[in-house]
Image (cartoon, rainbow, N blue to C red; front, side, top):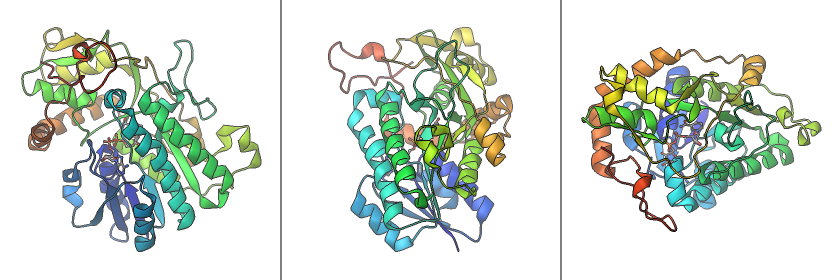
Length: 363
Ligand SMILES: NC(=O)c1ccc[n+]([C@@H]2O[C@H](COP(=O)([O-])OP(=O)(O)OC[C@H]3O[C@@H](n4cnc5c(N)ncnc54)[C@H](O)[C@@H]3O)[C@@H](O)[C@H]2O)c1
């Protein structure tokens, strides 16, 4: 029976992936779910499948701990979703991001070298390419890494070490994905869509940073999970020597539905979906420092080489997502009870070095 080791499994995308994996591969599969239950970790995200997965509370940046887990379970397939993921929190405390996103990526690749697996996917993000100029169409696998925020720079550092492993140890079968912004169930209400829904359901306004015209590329989380699974199982040619100067030949796949929407438009749609008036229920608040303005990525390589296509229509997917948060009130109320309010107000941060001052209630 194949053994899957999935890290970051108590987070948003990892938990969705574990649930889909059990649907796709069950009953002939053993799933080891690893997470250190950091700020965004929530073991309740695995409640529906808790009797079908083994949960390991471990830090992917701890080589001894992870090597021991690899030796104990001997995984065939590894998917590394684990990362610190919130741009706002990365500004206030970048070190944890470097540990999980850069060192953690290396430790995971190293474990797959020490205890060989059939394939290993490192899950990365569109944000490593930096900000897309207004005149550019989109990023591709050939685009240089040009991260400018602490979150995306830590992810880019992880990408660089994973690229080095791909080319130095090609027999390891390490692959990578860069995905657009995800939406769907189980996302921590510190991110735009669940923050908007959970605020509105409590009679609070939706906070929108600055003019709200920051533009993002949106993909349903189930489409992202299907892309990762396809990359994990793809029969790929060995990494050619030419990949050293032609990065699009590396086993890296950009994942997107080519669906660009501004943050303001997202807020507007969520307010409208709940039957409210955007003019009354959206408030503009000070922007976060160094906020990327625009991302869009081209999925042509994964479409043509692996036959992956997104199947979720954005309008229907967003409406279902809003309904999911409406129907799972106890899930997010428990999170807010434990963690407090999750919105940031950068206007409340005192001038001078940024530390812990950014988090306040947004009403
Ligand atoms: N959310 C998006 O829109 C998006 C888009 C593209 C790529 N990604 C990438 O997908 C992955 C998952 O993102 P997400 O949105 O589910 O994030 P998330 O913050 O919801 O979940 C991440 C999980 O990883 C765990 N984690 C963090 N550091 C860890 C460590 N050192 N050891 C063990 N567990 C650790 C956290 O506890 C959390 O449960 C990340 O690598 C992220 O960069 C996310």
